[in-house]
Image 1 (cartoon, rainbow over the protein chains, first blue to last red):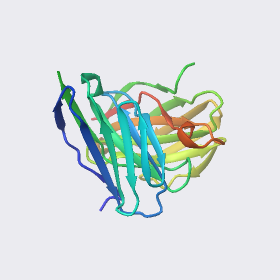
Image 2 (cartoon, chains in turn yellow, blue; image 1 turned 30 degrees about the horizontal axis):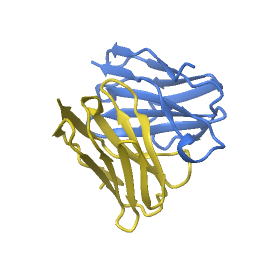
Image 3 (tube, helix red, strand yellow; image 1 turned 60 degrees about the vertical axis):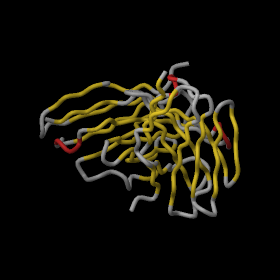
Image 4 (cartoon, rainbow over the protein chains, first blue to last red; image 1 turned 90 degrees about the horizontal axis):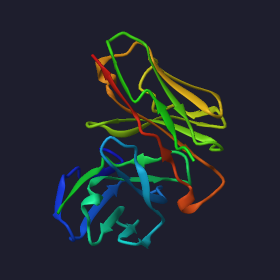
Length: 111
Length: 117
């Protein structure tokens, strides 16, 4: 079993819908949680960064962490076709250094 | 400011050949990471360096893989001999230490798509 599990999708939604993504993990030592966005044939880029449990909002994006359930989520409001990409969750035990990634969820936002 | 630079962008080679992938991190960054991405296994960390010193190479799949960082602005990942199962996209990423929060970010290059026939 992988340390970080993520549904591969694809997840197809109409433009303007809310996109809901999540990851589960097994290692309770993870403290820092990230979401990366990867466009086709590009490298991943950091989208959201959170520490420990709680919510963080940045524009149309909201990240949630529930450490008691070992579950993290990313919500994209008012989704746009430009949000079509693969979203990878990542986490580590201490700031920086070795990240453990989920397998990624492919999202398609249809106009 | 240029991001992480990788070369070549695409590499097609035959089984048994030596392959060398190159990476130039963002200037001033002191951490460098090599990842491999496949459909089956996702994004896997192979090795990372801090101040040009290898810190953790536990992700290197086998002795056919080696990585070097002779200076702060250049790193190579070598596969010798290459095998078809090495076909993947290889990413290099760099990071600047000493900061926390959202600035504690790994910046990825565009990747090298390797195909071993």
